[in-house]
Amino acid sequence: MRVLMEPAAPPSHLLKNSIDIFPWDDNFKTGLPQIDDQHRVLVSLLNKLASHVAFRSGTLSLEEVFDALTDYTIYHFKSEEAIWADVFADDHSMAEHLAVHEHFIQTLNTLKVARKKAPFDQ
Image (cartoon, rainbow, N blue to C red):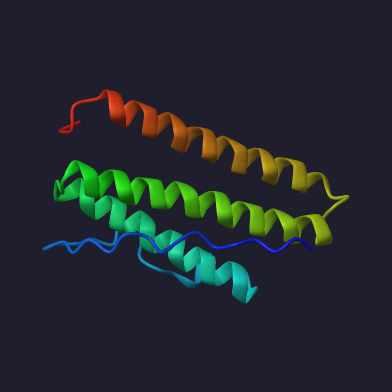
């Protein structure tokens, strides 16, 4: 099995206000500690991104959080896909799961490009 390196810790910009648009819920748990820990980080990053957007933090802060979310999502998907390859290699749902991951990464990249072209207020 290939060992993946976790991305550097996301920036810790302090906000006066924050929101949990995605409050942690046990429905995010898979029963695999490694993946559950990664899901917690992803939920935290999504909430941090939502807070930066909702409370109009600086462009640099928003870009750093968005980049951290993208990097961590890719790391998480590779970790999850390695587990799926060991357990569900012959299952038809693996191809569907990989397609969902690919679509999500494409959507993140599209949003990043669109974000850089749009005025900050958008």
